[in-house]
Structure formats: structure tokens, C-alpha cells
Length: 276
Image (cartoon, rainbow, N blue to C red; front, side, top):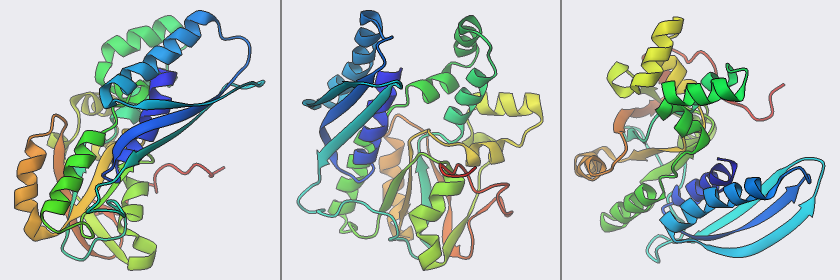
């Protein structure tokens, strides 16, 4: 799981620009407590993704440290017709905001696993909440979907009008980044309803008296793709999205003002790496 996720989150960054992931290097510091079985499993997790995306491993560095550290640098190649890639901050008023992938599912997996007190309980939790735990432990980077969106942008002359980023810190934190809200003054009224939210998230929230939309909106590490496009391109783009194997939904419309959820200010601003 550690090997998989360490590589997956970097593939996601490459793919969310519309680039084709090509390879990576890895810096690994080990504590000396990792045995050969651990190292083999770690490499197997990475190999599953290198096979899927046909990645080259360029090398890296090995060292010893009191703490286990994994540092991955991944790279890819952009199409010649899109040398700057799909970027944030290109949205305009009236554009469509949409999501490729799930929201809140990885947060649920983390929440469930943190509630367990032993390896046995954790294993049982993965059986009761399989989709959520898998989304947290082994998120699938949506690089192929990002590349398809890049091709769509090129074919329709929208290289500078389709915005894209992966969602690592939750929609509440990342949508303002996608819209460059501080500089542009743009926001959106995001609409999330029960039919937009994974059944496991709804089951957990119902059981615990939590608002499912708010839970999903705050959840990070799904590595889904948040995007914007001109409204007149949406009907044709929606046909492309329907061919993807992951959920895709229209979230709202870009407008002046803050990002709101179902007409209200979000409960919080999402995950902040540097908060106390």
C-alpha cells in the first residue's frame, strides 16, 4: 500500500496536467527494521502502477534514517499542441465546474481505519468498507482521463480554456485553487446531493448523523480531477466523460463570489498541511 500510494499521488500530478506519465525516480531512506518481505511488497505495490502506465524507473538514492522516508519524482510529456498543459486559473464566469472521480471516499477510508485498534480490526474494516479503504490505501491516479481531457481541449482549440487539477486536499480547499479565487474573485455554488455521493459515504454519514454532502466536500486524497470548461463545450465533453469508468458529474457554474456548497458557506476550508 505504501509503495502504491507513494507513486500514485505523483502520477496523479503529472496526469492532471494532461501529460502522459513516462517515468520516475525514487529516494528511499530505511530504518533498518524493514525486512525483505516488506521491501518486496513495497516494490510490488509500485510495480502494479509501473505496469499499468508503462513507466520507466530512472534510479534514485538509498539511505538509512531513524524515520522511513519515500520521495518520488515523476515526470511526463505534454502534447506539442499543448506545451503549457491544462492549468488552474483559466475559468471565466459561466463556465461549467465538474468532477471526474469520487469525493469523500478516501476520507471515509482514513476515518474508518483510524477508528480501529488492531491489525485484525483494520482488516475487518477493509471488508466492511471495501471501496473507502481501497480509495485511501490504493487510490488510482486518473492520468488516462486527464490525457483524454487534454486531447479534447486540443481538438476543440480549448488548450487555454479547460482548467484541471487533482483533488488532494478536498474540494473545499482545491476548488478555490482551481478558480484562482483570490486573484480572480471567482467562485461557484457547488451542488452535491445523495445521488452524487458514494453509497459507503452515505451509509457512514447516515449512521453517525453527519451531513453527507459536507463530509464529501471536505474530504481529500481521492485524487479525483476537478475541472472547468466553457459552457458551450459541455454537451460534447459530457459525451466523452460518459465513456470513463469512474463517476463524472457536473458540480456547478462559475460565478463571482465565494465557493458555496448547496447554497451555503462550507463548514470549513478543507485540509491545510500547515495548520496547527
